[in-house]
Image (cartoon, rainbow, N blue to C red; front, top):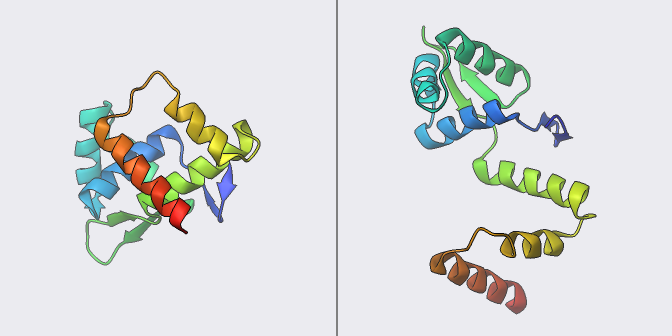
Length: 130
């Protein structure tokens, strides 16, 4: 997806995989990202390095180059990224209707767990109270 939201291009599938690594691990060197990425999808060290360099140019990650081994961190939080993707998805597929998006998601073949259903109930209650 190359839609730009808030000045930062939405990440591709591979970029999202790297961002998930950084969200889970926190600030990481190229070697650490490569090792985690290699467990998910086989790739070389130079591929991880190039992806991080491109993501840095796109402002998706920030780089601390004060040490010999550069350390990368996600420039945007996971929560904010999810909001941007959902907003884009609602706009493009559901004519801007988040309620239609939610109804479609809840009606999908993926069954929500009882914990997820309770969380949804609590969220709806908070929205109703506001």
